[in-house]
Picture (spheres, rainbow, N blue to C red):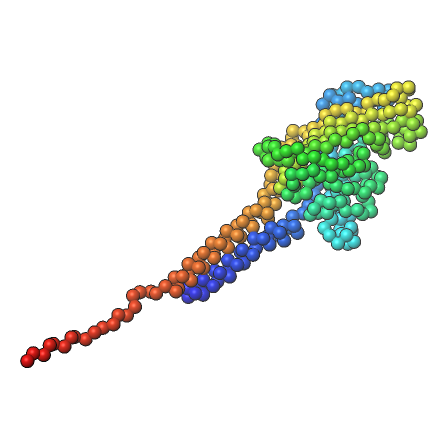
Length: 332
């Protein structure tokens, strides 16, 4: 019975030991993915920024500007693209809606972002766009890959429609969570006008006829939880200007927007809580289960060897030789 038990334990030990690398290197890359129907909303604010008044074409200080960013998973579109892409695809219909301190719309820019559900690499398919214009993204946007590394990444800037490096600047602690800090600078770049303008009668076409152009620069900062690759906090120091043309009445340039945009406090708390819960699920496949299987396999192996050794050990002392009585000496 001991020998049978030791063989069973040995088989279980081999199984658990084999499951350790399989969970980490086979199951994790296939199971860890962004759900196609995910919905997320983030609110950012710039306090006391400079904002243009299109009625007077002058820049003035305002109390605040609010930016509402929504990411909505389009399940139907992702399933359609998966048929030809032959991999798990996520389609995010994103919207960046900007409003002033009175709640009036300043601009709104829709996006369609298509990417691999596992690696977050862009997937180029019909519908990939920014503000209705087709684009071909390179690099990441919105989210870093699972198990983010301490290195620079290529990051897509939607306003400038360009990809530039976003640099790893070190490891920090944010609200009790260990994060990687990344920073990207987009130098002054000529960018398109938003197709939805806050004043009726002003369109990108009408602005183009005046010869006036729009320029943009930003310093983008992200605090990224490395296990999930999800940013827990973000900031931008951004400037937009109108330059040249007849619209400015002889002026060289006018500020459209200048401000320090930060995530609103209530959304910081909810984002940190969400990312922390998701982190446990990723660690389950990358750390907890692999190391657990390995430890259990070694324990079962030791128990199997111990039972085998007990089975080979004699149960008690062996039989001893017996001798009869010695003959008495014969005397004469």
